[in-house]
Image 1 (cartoon, rainbow, N blue to C red):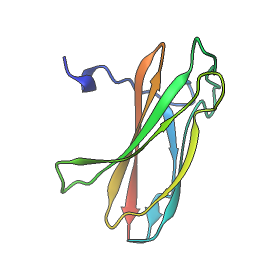
Image 2: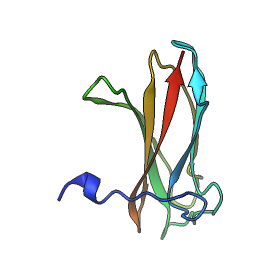
Image 3: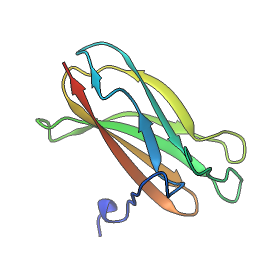
Image 4: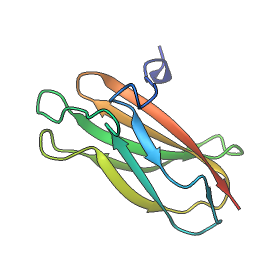
Length: 118
C-alpha cells in the first residue's frame, strides 16, 4: 500500500476534514500573493485534545517537474489553535497547490487548486 492510497478527499462543504485552499486563480509571475488554508471552513472541525487537526502541509507541483516542492508545515496545539493559516508565496509558472491536513482520529486529507501564472 502507498501513502497516496490512504489520503482522503471530499467536498469541503460536506466534509469537515478537507483543507480548503483560498488563493487567486491567476497571478503575475514572480509577484507575491496570499494563500489561506483552513480546515472546517463550512463545517467546523472539533478542536479538542481528543479530536483535532494536528498540522497542514502546503506544496506546489509544476507540470514540467517530476518533483513536488514543499512550501511549509503549519502545526497546531490541540484544543488551543484553529487549523487556519495565511501565508504569502510567489510562482514563476503555472502550478498546482496541494494541501494535506492530518486529523488525529481520521487521518490524512487532501485538496488542490491550480494557479495560472501570466
